[in-house]
Length: 438
Image (cartoon, rainbow, N blue to C red; front, side, top):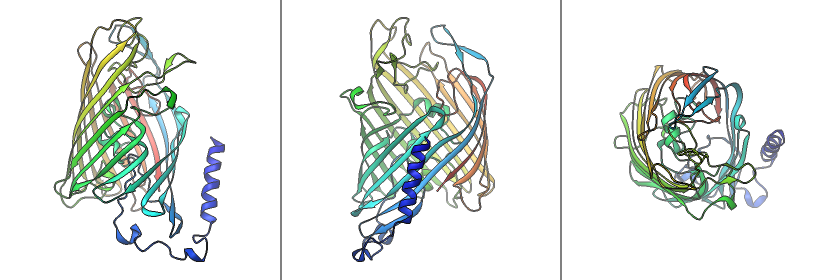
């Protein structure tokens, strides 16, 4: 970790100290058709949108900006000792956490090279609670506002929170229902653009549902497919990055309606060393990993399943008030196992509703959320209620904030050290966090 961060710091220092013009042939700050002058380039990088950043260098051959995001968080999941019963009647222990972490750190290098339309982003990413570290990139060619083509790491566009709105959410991580149903990040290629004013699309083909800790040799020959279409009929925009609040304080009523879908044939990607599935993205509503031994029947392990999900979302903004909702339905089909299974498919549904307003515009925001997951026949339901507040204590910026939040959870189907939830928990979770984006 320290070596990696030292390498990043050294790279940034080297770039910052380098002259912006390499020789007398590079005296122009940028070519005549540079995006800053024409406004033609579409500032979009996929699901991971960096901040505006600081210019480290620019010549007529290209440019590089440095951007970063840092989140420090205290989390307390309660009560400390509890159990839950799964859909087969087995009792499991819940392991609630209380910890303080420099939770998530992302350092971005971004810009264009050769042609203003040929863009790149390199991201150094770490999540300290899970000890995960990665370096990934995106290459793209922005043909026009209507069509841009990219390759690299991106989220499968199956849920509205996967369109670059992070970190402009109410809390610092996704709500329970969204985290349960949504697809994940994978390597692939995607296209996006604006069909007509206010109507946008994104479509992606990826290797699988999640690239996290999965190597090329573990992948199958099946691809994942996802796409989304959304319409903003009144203002033709919905705030920076499609944010999940109204810090910008819309004077005109802004609306957004969207529809998304995703499908992927999933494998457990079992590790031969530990004989445990490394695919942890698909969980049942009682929080069991679909690919864990005995998840659907004693002594039987699921070895293949198709994950399909559709979602419909709507959002509204007006003078500091934000309301957003999304409905999701998931199918687990084409189940294959090493023994007989009691069902041939599983269909789960859910939704969330979020709302916020600013008692003190651009300074103090308060919000409330509820989300619900309805399990298929024989599987339990789950729900939550959230209350929280954001204090934007640095003058005239939403990129620096303190967040305080309380969640009351009834049987979390989500289990991860990354977000707010632990599988099977029933009770409150408290969090206090500070974040900076630049």
